Length: 263
Image (tube, rainbow, N blue to C red; front, side, top):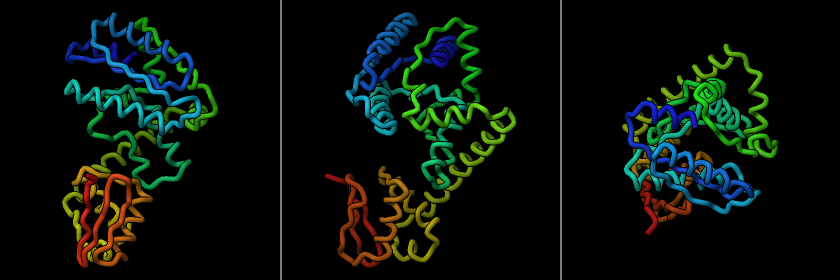
């Protein structure tokens, strides 16, 4: 609500309001109607869709469904996807990744260059104060207080952080984001399909080059599957075919690996 109000007040953009109803809560259709009414009040076009994920849907499943919808709306309107993620979201996401176990990229969160996140410098408290000061209305998601979700449990623990600790963590996150950009650029420059080269360098570097090679084909794998693919690159016999993900296959020659898109 705060993001939308800020963007409307700036007068710098043509805006489309998009709302995805996950179908997780019985009353979620009320939220959709609330957002539709808000868009009408601002005089903005409104896009919505309802999923039927059910009450047992995981956070990851909800996120995938939501972003699939948002990406389609973005494409339809030739727009930039803009979300209201804020400073607290950064800290919570890092905490989630650490609890689950993560590589270094799990600390460089919310750095997707295709998504505009203009509120990352602001805390949730600051956004709440803005909303109150400007008389904004909003709806609290009932699941935000449920301990079923890991994010909510961690949110309570992070709420006791003092301002100095928050600042230090955000500074470290920002440095990690910059580092990720530098590594991505260097990996893209060095990306190779040579099995010998990837076999002879350290695994950490090989995994980054493999990530860049897949990205050049508009493909991606999570770290565990990339690690298994790297093992196949080192050991597979010429002529072998390996399927690291359901939407790709890799064929091996004596010297190279060749990534193929699905038909």
